[in-house]
Image (cartoon, rainbow, N blue to C red):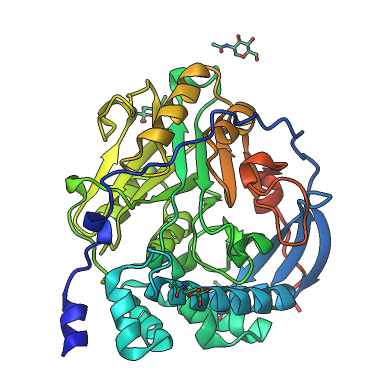
Length: 439
Ligand SMILES: *[C@@H]1O[C@H](CO)[C@@H](O)[C@H](O)[C@H]1NC(C)=O
Ligand SMILES: *[C@@H]1O[C@H](CO)[C@@H](O)[C@H](O)[C@H]1NC(C)=O
Ligand SMILES: *[C@@H]1O[C@H](CO)[C@@H](O)[C@H](O)[C@H]1NC(C)=O
Ligand SMILES: *[C@@H]1O[C@H](CO)[C@@H](O)[C@H](O)[C@H]1NC(C)=O
């Protein structure tokens, strides 16, 4: 009965118990990132039926690019086959990490989980609590996700149930993160649309050891078009990525909302799946706006969707109750620490977060009219100190994306992605790849 009541109760964040706004801010001594950008094309490593592996970057900043073709199951299978050891390791390490975080959540060392999740664990245990979360989101989730997870398990040998469980992590913990979309007067002539996705999340966790760009080439239009998921080996949700339709996504977890967000809910589509659906299925910004407006939404987020074909960007205030869309001239929250800047939609780290927004606004104003991917990498993310785990700067108008990940466990150099070497990826090198011969 207790469980049923919790299931029927819409989740409320523990925000009331916290301060009303975030208190972090970047260090005033932050330095620009002067590392040269890596620009060589990806190198072919090997192929299997329905899959090809390339590497890009050199030295310690190397990112696997995994191409997969076919049906959802086949794409999952090829991913698992090509990245077998790494996928097994990720699944194992993330599971262990989740268990540790949950222990810390229960004993009060960290405060990142929603209350309903912790009471589910107290009542039925972690495995069952995650399976329950899978069950309540399944009705809102495309069946192709589960077909692909099955393929991934079969191809990699990692246990299916654990793969399914770790895919709920996005719904249960919150990253901070920053974003912007800039066009017209904010960028040089011909600049089109420039978009940032900076992910601030769990640099102490295992994710930094598993950078991967997965390029999907579905064999049937009912599974959408080609897109690139910028994330982690063995993990198929989307937090970062762009598509062959030139759509790209940004996302911020909101821990400090205002009252305009309304309530959250656990009954809906996990946000890492709706973001992926935008990349996989939507052809225009309008498609994405319709998808987000009509979805069964869950937790408080700020999302960003750019369409470089139309040089348009929308920021989205997103919760179970609300889907509000922003251009630069109706941007919220309205505050002296979050000034409206012509032709730029932006947020730093959270909704109510003066310390980061102030510095982000100052840097955007300083380079207004001159905003490029290079300036973003050199002078914006490292000065705002945002994007600790991973960053993508989308310059899809020019067919380019710049990617960086935090220092992996066995690597040296700076810890945070915003201080490391960025890798330039040409979109044509991803979407114009010939599939391996049919076996
Ligand atoms: C909470 O749990 C973690 C992980 O098991 C442990 O390292 C830590 O010492 C615990 N803290 C308290 C206050 O019990
Ligand atoms: C896609 O692949 C699946 C599995 O091999 C096959 O059944 C299906 O017919 C293919 N679809 C197309 C349009 O080729
Ligand atoms: C620039 O983006 C804004 C939305 O932020 C949009 O209203 C405007 O039409 C865009 N400009 C061009 C030239 O596409
Ligand atoms: C834009 O960048 C160029 C080259 O770095 C510089 O010469 C120019 O002064 C900058 N303009 C603005 C408005 O910042």
